Image (cartoon, rainbow, N blue to C red):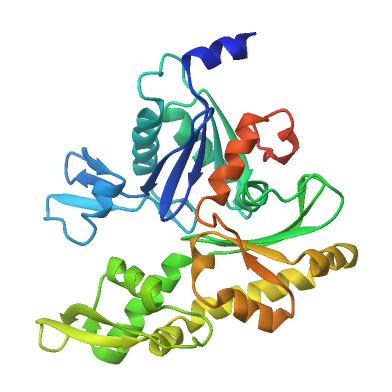
Length: 344
C-alpha cells in the first residue's frame, strides 16, 4: 500500500551510469534521457556550470576558469562529488515536478565491481536524491534488455562493450555462471587512435576527433571497400593547425591493441565456460551489446577467431538501460538478479 502511494508522488528510475553516456529510464515513461557523462565546473568555487551534452561540447575547449570533467572512468566512479552532481541533475530532469518523495533507483554497474566501488555508487545515488538504491550487473541488464531467457537453466552468453569496460558473461537461472570483465572499451579505442596519429603523423588530435574517426572509418576486420577521411589537428613540430587524410586500414592498425584485448578476453571467457553451457552457446550464439560492439567488422573478427555465431543487438546502445527498466517494472520477478551488498 505504501509503495503504491509512493508511486503516485514519485517516479522510480533506472540508470545506466556509463563511462561515456548516462541513460535514464523512468517507470511508466521509458527512456527519458541520454546524456554524455560529463560535468563542467568553475575552478575555485567548484560550482557546476553544465552537465551532459552542454558540458561535453566544452571538452578540450574551456578557458582556464572552467574545467570539463568525465567523473566515470573504466565503468566506475573516479570523482565522487562530480558523479553526485551528474546524478542529481539527471534525476531532477527525469523527475520534473514529481519530486515530492525521493525515487527508488536501479543502477547498472560492471560485473567486476569491488565492494568499495559498490558502496561508492550507492552513496553517490543516495546523496543525489535516491531513497533506495539497487545495483544490477551490466551483462545481466543487457541480456534482459535483448529478451534473453536468463531465468532458464540453459546458457546465454553476452558481450557488452561500453565506453570504459568490456563485460563478457555466461548466464543461467538468474545469475552469472562465469564472467570476464576488462577495463577496455570505446575510450581505449579513442586513445589508441590519438596515440597512433601522434606517433605516425606528428599531429595532436582531441578525444572527440578520435571518436569521430572511429565511427566513420574505424573497423576491426578488412572492409570490402576501404575508406578514408580528412582530419584536423595541431602539428607537433611546427605548432600550427594541419590537415591530413587517414584510411580505414590505418585506423584498423591503430585499433589493434584494444581489439586484441577484447578478442583475448572472449577466448578466456569461453575457456572458463562449463561444458554443458558451452553446448547451449554453440546452438544459440553470442549477443553483442554496447556502443563498442558497433565497431565495424568486430563481430566478423570474433566469429573467425572462435568459429561461433555472433550477432549485434538491434538496440545495442540502449540494451542495458532497457533491461534495467524491465527489472524496475517487475522488481519482484527479477529480485534474484540484483547485486547483494552490505546493506542487503
